Image (cartoon, rainbow, N blue to C red; front, side):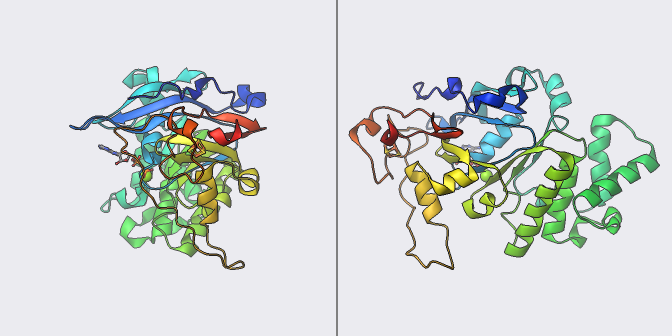
Length: 336
Ligand SMILES: Nc1ncnc2c1ncn2[C@@H]1O[C@H](COP(=O)(O)OP(=O)(O)O)[C@@H](O)[C@H]1O
Ligand code: SF4
Ligand SMILES: [Mg+2]
């Protein structure tokens, strides 16, 4: 059952620069139909992204990050479907567009680097042809020399040498392949890029290189990004604001410094205290625990089964996402 009390759509998310926002998401809900009932994968999320801003979406595996990212581009596949909400870019709600209109917007306004993108590069097609294909699909056939120049520029933008132009995916390392995917995402110059776990399948050093590439792209092109990840420590080094997701809900949003200085939601507190530190050896905090069945969420707070501070009210009333301090939003009864 959808919990309509969690109507965060009217929340004034960072109101002062509202006109300038690149993306406005309101009360977005996505379900997957199963024989045993709908899995509520995204349960009414609302947030904004501003020009040139990097927003991190963090949460454990299965909390709905990929589903949310796909829903932003209306790419959720059956048995999934968007059941409610708005995804507004430049005054247009993508949820209401026809498929033809949507095709025009996608990749030009909003590009996605899907989870595992580097593994879905076609192994038998050269990098130059895969990037060219993306450009020509949207812009029609291009003069050969201009196209080559443009692709070389894109490769340079993501820190790859020109020789990659003629190479095949299997000749590249994981980090290089991921940077090719970033080049493809920026090819049509969209103001917003969504990167789903762009560093997750890479080893630590390469993770940093790819993270730095994203930062360089943001700086040089002035794009906004939503970067999805499950590693709060790594995301913190990359993004301006963090949205913490739990079981399909955004439970806290705040600027990075603020959320680390004063995490308010008990789940955010657990996430932060479980980041290992060399300087300060501390006992490992166990954050694992039973979550509820996503087909049948309990009434009240979504985190109640794992929360060390659960109260009676938490089992009855869903806490709304409220702005407790400027730009710091939290959904928890502890602060009422
Ligand atoms: N095709 C599907 N059918 C049923 N449930 C699905 C399907 N795809 C994803 N889910 C469920 O939706 C929830 C969110 O998944 P996902 O968006 O992939 O999470 P994340 O990216 O945070 O790991 C999970 O509980 C997952 O099991
Ligand atoms: S609302 Fe209650 S159960 Fe939910 S996080 Fe806050 S204290 Fe815990
Ligand atoms: Mg995912």
